[in-house]
Length: 238
Image 1 (cartoon, rainbow, N blue to C red):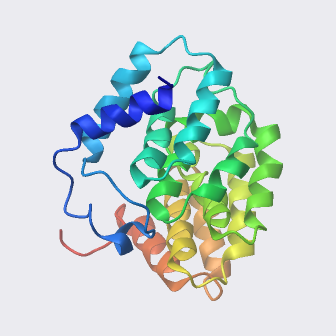
Image 2 (image 1 turned 90 degrees about the vertical axis):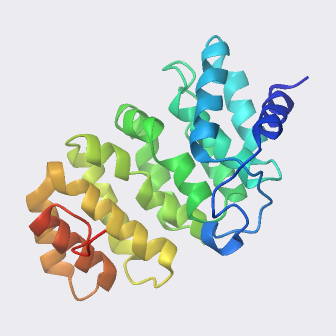
């Protein structure tokens, strides 16, 4: 039995109760079939599976990610991104260019963000920046909106975690290229990355928003300014 089939059987065996969004195509932004299973359960399964397969070589691990991402269901695709969160340093050393292929099979914010945010991007973008810089710029110029969103959200985790001037500069270059788009996949991504930068690049973000307020998406300006002033995304009471 392949690792993919082993994981799929594990998902099916634990698919008893999903979330309120399980059957809503428009919430996740795609029409891929989904197994009724919650994210906390998926994360527990992924963590356990990676613990049991901590010696899986990087070549086999990246092949497994490819197989899952090319799978039929939303659940398989997201499971690949979750596995990345629990991968060892050696297992993360695959060629970042694989993301170019993987993103061809992902649609909607949930699938893209599960792959592009988290421990992998937080750790590997700074470490492998020489490889990631041209790739992220390539994504920003892509006709594929999944890649354009990835060119922004890939920076959210590393810029939230630490001060990385080179990453911040490229993130803003990508924002500049995409800021006139009106699709929510892009406008919300721009807001997210600007807010993620505030902790370690506060002055840079403040000046950038001030200089480009008239051309940035209104939601990005509004949410970033609120974050700068209050430390929160919104002033609305939860």
